[in-house]
Image (cartoon, rainbow, N blue to C red; front, top):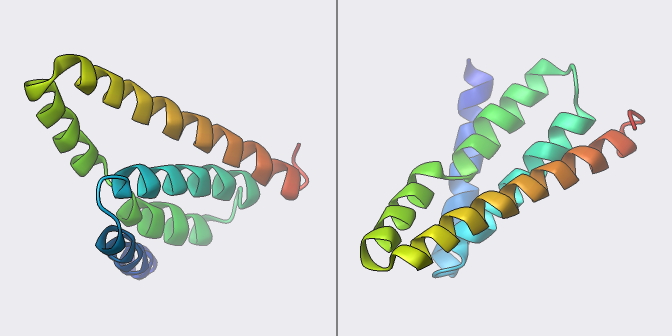
Length: 113
């Protein structure tokens, strides 16, 4: 699966660039952009498995980060339970909404509305 590896390399470099120039908001930004892009790509590229492997599994999969989200979430829960709950719920709702929005935009752009 070279195509997944190539996409993963691109996504990892993009995430490094974003996180190098931002502090606390970087995780929100990469996960938000990644969710929007993943939804759009799935709406637009339905049935084009090579592109979905490159963009979805590879690039977006390495650009976004569930492990860093989980680590920050559990750190917050340990120090301030309410802030941790709000963080986890907020990130989840934001990413779900952006993915849904991207999916609908991709379907309209791809003529699948």
